[in-house]
Length: 305
Image (cartoon, rainbow, N blue to C red):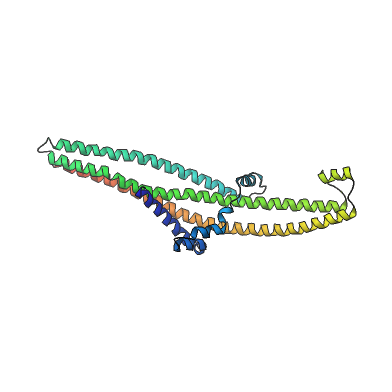
């Protein structure tokens, strides 16, 4: 296995663990603690939590996306932002990769200068030392691109990290859509049961329904049957109201906690991306200065011939 790849993955894991450790809630998580302190057993502890089994089906997610009647505008905007952020970072990484490929070629071609100057120095007496020295500088310049690109990969990995963060933002939005969808379905079910109960109490059917057709075909229900159904519906309505109350509380808690995390994410993102971009710019400036220095040294070599 490529040791450079392993080292990059190690650094990525270390950065991730540092982020989790700095989180005010996740740092106290038992699974996280067991991962850090136990070589074995932490996977079993994770499986016991059932977190991996709590993912909702894709079909339900699609239903929630297209059928939620009252989506939260903030989460809709956040979802669009996460899509755009991922698109921008992906494009930036592709541009960087193309520039790096071309830069690699430019640097390596300078090795040809080194070879030509060295060969030329062999046939010159007075100019030989200067040409040999200039060739050496070109060889050093050509070889320096490997370290430069390795450093570039470090900054690219910092940007790639936010590709995953943008996906995490979308997951939060999908979770909220699912909660809102379940909430709306529960509210509709409660309204339907209340309407059925009212129809049984008054003996009138407001809208076309299977119940109305059944009554016309097979006759009206007996008072005892109607009373039993009303009692059952009243119990279901009471349960539905309690469930709706719980769902509303869970939704409010989720929104509150989610926005605290989102604000925290925004602050962290601004700091991280600002730092990565500044460091990348500094690296480019340093690289250009080294190139200038190489040609300055070559010029001095030529001047001494």
